[in-house]
Amino acid sequence: MNLTKAFERYLRFHRAEGSSPKTLEWHTYSLRQFCDYLTTHNHSGDVEDLCADDLRAYIDELRERGL
Image (cartoon, rainbow, N blue to C red; front, side, top):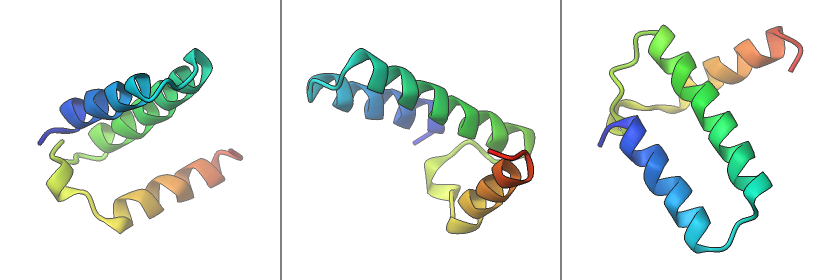
């Protein structure tokens, strides 16, 4: 499954569970930032290709930016 489809399913789940608009906004923003990071680092875009090192590298980049 590609990341965009997984992202949409995740948000649909939160809407169905009754998450607040602010929570949905935060999840949308955060996941979009992560997907953009993966795209700029030549990730295939498939969920199956994600690994812990992808997330670690993203967290390292956020820390380097002071976030």
